[in-house]
Length: 115
Image: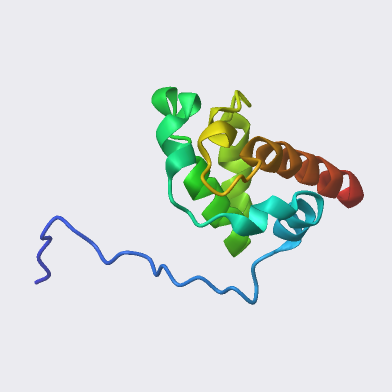
């Protein structure tokens, strides 16, 4: 007789970088070279106004873009209010506001090609 202990095996969290779609990352990096300077310090996420009201995190967004996990990026990128606070506090001078703008633009462009 099987017993239920209140938990179940979790789904695998392996990321297959070879199968992920890096088009958004390449699109953003080509148009905003400062994106390559990001060290993931989290200064942008700490000052984010959108993060105070939603589950948005620019640090998480940057990681997901670099990994090529575009389905997750698509879900959260529209939560950014483009206020620019993140750009002001970035110690590496990354134009994070433009990164978000270009990410949105990339999805629009790729969606138009799919039609």
